Image 1 (cartoon, rainbow, N blue to C red):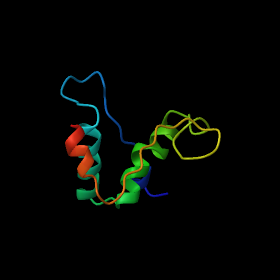
Image 2: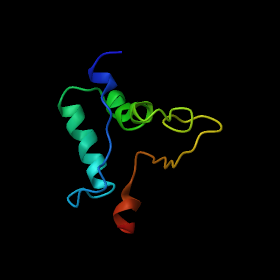
Image 3: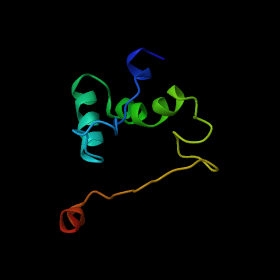
Image 4: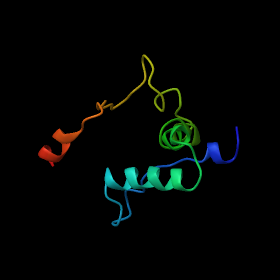
Length: 84
């Protein structure tokens, strides 16, 4: 594993300038702009973050028996603009 791919990602909720949802999306965008692949950026906020706090047996990947909040969207996310 390269040093870049072991980089964890995630919001610091105690910071008043961090907005849940938007801040995570922005961080993923910036990680890709910095040179990570989209997959490495997603893993930074899931698998790598769980590994960093030694909780990879409980969450961090999609697997039977692990905790997860998951929303799968199709190619057309127009309904999100209606709900916002």
